[in-house]
Length: 396
Image (tube, rainbow, N blue to C red; front, side, top):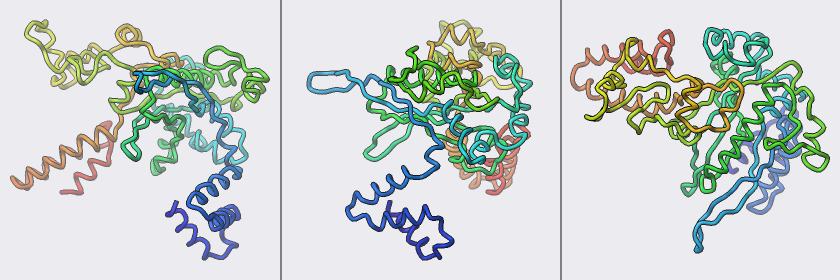
């Protein structure tokens, strides 16, 4: 808040004809705040009065179970949680006066068709119940991103964010926060399997509505909207959300811990079978079938045996518990994507920098060769990202 006030004081020195009236009103309200809580309240009141508040829908209120410990032992109660619904975000963006908001979802003219052209050869695209029968120019992809977050006093939160991949694909220089919309945030102290399932049921129900392009007539648990129960949603029931546009879940992305929390895969990096995409394993017991040696994850290359054991949707359902996200049309385990930041920047980069430091003291010519190999590996033509390769080349 103090940083915001200092920035606004600088704007106050500019001629008032150059500063938007809404910003001038904010400066006046903050200057008039007296107590320590005053600036916060003044900012909140200013935000509530802005017309762009209409660009986001009213949050959907759900009751979630909460468990806590006290002197009597574990207790159960319930609390209210609020979720921004993806289908209502699309609807309000479409109805809002500013055309730039729909550009946030569609990426601009031709961006949707160009985005889907890279997916048309995949089995997922060909078998998708929506994509195979709908004009790609009217299918908006949404990606669900999950991660944990920490706040003061080591308090943790579980965050679910709606990512707009077509925007980052059309404009690679766009900032990360320009392509993300926070839809759920719950304290890790109270978040548990039951409350998490309740939240995911709500999000899956919203994505089902997105795939049809129409507002739903009832809530995620079958209760119809009425004049007493969500009356504004009753008035929208059955109407088109955004003209001819529909939305699909393009992928779910998160770090390994969040994937474990949401999907509980039976094959995970901490177990013998360490990959939920195939039957790759990371150790073999003496009593195991000797054939498992061929499935070790250290067997690289296109002829590796574990490449012939890629999981299908039915096999995933047989060996893993069902989650609400699996009900979304077009769901596939191959659309569970890892978090690139955790893999490259928090894991690979640390090892690369350490290796460079060790090799640098040993042989400068070998260091240049290592940097060249890493740069080639991370080149986009090889299916990887460019930034780490450029960084390694620049280091040499």
